[in-house]
Amino acid sequence: MKALSDPIRLIPLLFLGAIAIGTVILSLPVATADGKGASLTTALFTATSAVAVTGLIVEDTPTYWSPFGQGAILLMFQIGGLGIMTAATLLGLMAGRGFGLRDRMATHVERSRLNLLGTSSVLKLILGITVTVEAIVAVILALRFALAWDMAPLEAAWHGLFHAVSAFNNAGFSTFSTGLSGFTGDALILAPIAITVMISALGFPVMEDWRGHGFRWRRWTPHSKMTVTGTIGLLAFGFLALLVMEWSNPETLGSLPVWDKLVNAAFHSVMPRTAGFNSLDLSAFHEESLVVNYVLMFIGGGSAGTAGGIKITTFMVLIAIVLAEVLRRRDAAMFGRRFGHALERQALTVASIALLLVLAATMFITSVTRLPLQDVLFETISAFATVGLSTGITADLPPSALVVLVVLMFVGRVGTITAATALALDARDLPYRYPEENPIVG
Picture: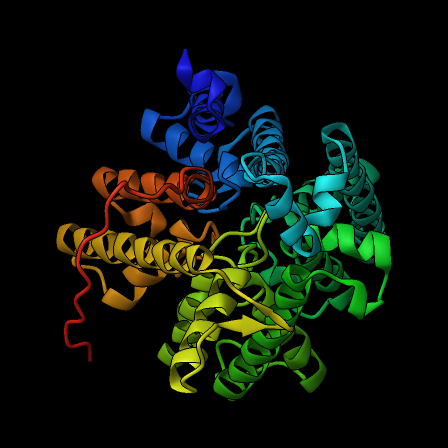
């Protein structure tokens, strides 16, 4: 049973097991509102979307699934999100086990918080943050639903809990048929959800730095600095781009008061990077706004968290590599630290594999559906980056296309973690080297 002793194989197997169990549960008659049970395709797609904390759906969550089914979906994305955080953190710890003392000291600045904490301490901290944030946000949302939207206490509590857990795990599932578009003018609903998404999307290493050092920037690790800096930059880019491009669009921001325009532009600068909630109709976005979403979704959020995409640090490393080449510098560096060649190769590999998978899936789905390219590309990036946003084509896709999206969601969530860690764990030198050759590039 080598697979059970090797974390690189164990993590995907655990997620596959969770998806399989979720598929069986959602296939039960009690899981659907009509009592007939879901089809295999619907159950598999929904279970994968929940465990992979994506949020893409082929059936309307509040009307198709029974309270039991909705509860099962909530449990799946809670386990999926918590498991992903735990797996990513523990695999990050394990990636340093093969290092000698000298190498451990050399990487002390990057991973001292994680290396000094025992496994049980890491898990306790993750669990503590998860429970605390979800509980606080659930109460805030429940009170708002009850007081401002006249919902019954139990109904408000359920909606609040579901959206709090969904937001923290970046799942994007909603118990409202129109998502959050019914709350376009309610900043007290949109803001807590957006803030929750941002916190969890930063990743556990940043949370640990924040807990240990507060806002003392100089004491933060370069990883945390890169993640926070990249996050701020992407949020500002998304906010300004969407605000300008959709300002006069009568189907999105155009019909809203100025304050609501600002709130919804800010909300939608957060969601494409990982979460999948929507307060505006994405199918009504201008083409250039969809392109902005492509970029935000593909990059994603922070490492060792619930966010998807290639991750901010990967993107920042790629930027550093490009700048080093353009400026003719020997090393790619950021925040006073240079990157090793192995890390640079990992970043290039993760980004290249992601791009190839998205392009291959887009070509296949386009060929079997003949849907507009911009919508299919949006869907495939959203699936791979485990975002969950859609222009509305998911339910119209044939089974073959849905299977492709299932694979993308699984690989996008589990594959990038295991692939990056496998590269770190299995790095080895061949006993020989080929003669050097420099072909013409560019």
